[in-house]
Length: 65
Image (cartoon, rainbow, N blue to C red; front, side):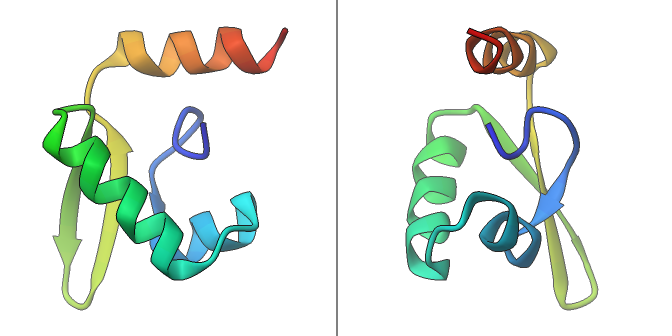
């Protein structure tokens, strides 16, 4: 859900979601392996985003319930 509105770095997700860095990283690995998340590396910074627009829309619908 942290990524449903816009791409974010792990640091941004930690502050947005309130999870520990290790928890965010573990979730990202699983989401990436499932093909739901992609990442773009820019220097030392890695930005993650939801790979398919439909997944972001579903996340937004769930959060509005």
